[in-house]
Amino acid sequence: MLQEYKRILAPVDGSDEAEIALKKATQIAIRNHATLDVLDVLDTRQFVGAYGGMLTSDVIYQITEDTQDYLSGLQGELIKAGLPKEQIKIHIRFGDPKTIISLDFLKDYHDDLIILGSTGLNAVERLLVGSVSSYVTRNALTDVIVVRTDLNNQAIKKSNKKNNKK
Image 1: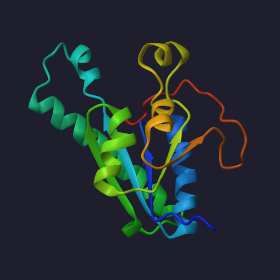
Image 2 (image 1 turned 90 degrees about the horizontal axis):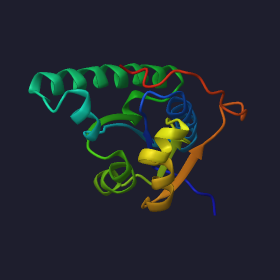
Image 3 (image 1 turned 90 degrees about the vertical axis):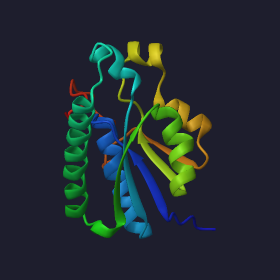
């Protein structure tokens, strides 16, 4: 039986790996005439140290606006790649990316496939906080594709770019 996906979740975090996974998700969405949910989860745990515990409404507003701008830019790229605008949905959530991607978001939107980059973390960060992709593959309520290659199926070259969205 041929698998046909109707709704695809592509989490992004500004990393090269996530954006390459988004490009692959776009091609799969085009072939399947599927809706593509582009999700950026703002990890609230990182705000505690970064803002000295003083997370004001102005800071939250600015972070949300920056993320919205980033996602709107990605949406424009997806349209240029051939995905119709009505098939692209962008979302911002606050919380733990691991549980939101693998459980909470799927319960709300019923995606039948998650496509995400292998990691946006370096080895030390993976050791300390754990990989989101590892957690998602173990706990997701649906199929998961972890992207490890670019659109030409070549290994993704690591760069020093991290969280370029902001």
